[in-house]
Image (tube, rainbow, N blue to C red):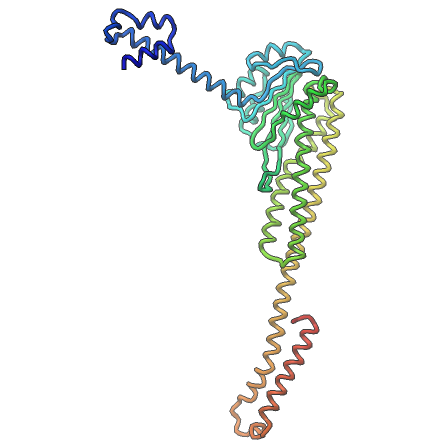
Length: 383
């Protein structure tokens, strides 16, 4: 055991620890209080180093990117603790991207950028409806993202924006495509990136809105498949269940897209610090896309309601056809039942019972009447 402790001393401690540990009392391998103090010092330093390394690794995963930009060009990567120094230079702006940050990290971001407590609380909790709020000089925007997974189901996420005079903070939650490509595309357009954080906000919002087009198109494909099942196959309860599931997905998309109309209107028409007037016309493009998506969703919902009514009508028609068939067969069976019941009466004087050809005549007449009734039912479409 003492040998193992000596090895740990060689690996982990500094010169002062060696001086403390290798006292004359240590040579005969007799532990002394100074020896235990040295061991505690070594393990404390090692544990702190491991904790700090894990904390830094976790922060690196939560901070996707953090850089300063000036005149449309990327100046340098910035450490979170140095952001307040960069913000002093009004010719630069900071763009930081976070993915599901912890509460401690958000508090550090809040202290660096001076964000409002309510906005930071919403960004940490997530599960917010799309909205736009103004807190002093900073703007807080919430948007919901959507994408189709491999199982052809919609996965929703959230993206929060903090936009200030010379910064933009992007916080992602849940299922969301990283905005690395958006950052690279912006960096290749310095003429537009020089407009500042307002153009960055436009680029990411445009990317999020454009991701709704394949989602709505996939829902339209599902609607076409349901229509084929309604009109080309036999109506069933499974089809009704598919319709309701699709209506639920359309309602979720509607809730995510509809508030964006008001958000774009405010970004276009109101003077907001942090968004230059040169950038405001770009949000008109997002506004047009949102209107198109909203109309596509409304049209799909209307067609889906029509499909649901058609499915119920076809089910009712199918039930009516079944009822007609039962009624037709009941009428056909009623003919021999009536004849058998008539001749089954126990009257003593029935002339037909004494006839030699009475039985063949009754059977032939009954079958003839049944055939005639069947022919007319078949001709009218009841059979």
